[in-house]
Length: 162
Figure 1 (cartoon, rainbow, N blue to C red):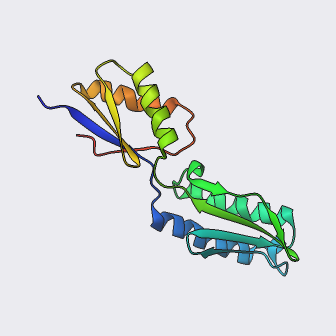
Figure 2: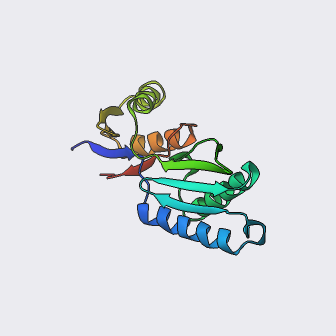
């Protein structure tokens, strides 16, 4: 019998991220506390730029955006939000979406699998994803449960379960 495998990836559904951004833009445009204060949230290239006339309002817009991302099923671990910084008379926050598993997190995942997963489970890094294989599908499912329980810095999805 061939080995069963699955891939561990960290990807963001771009359509859902765009929908969350548009919903946040609508809420910012309609909310009374954001009227006539220069508050906005917009996409510029790969980044989402939040602008407001005070640091507190910029953080409030970021919270609105985070709430919309959560509603759309996007983990906040995928969101990389910078600190508010002054730019002229307004405050800005730049955010980006993280995609892929960097080599440091891949090493952590491989170490967790090596140390704590059932012994039949093997893992290897392939680019920005990790392939996990074993003879036993039950061992692979136990490994998925193990990784879901860990507090890692990236949002993990499990795909290509064969």
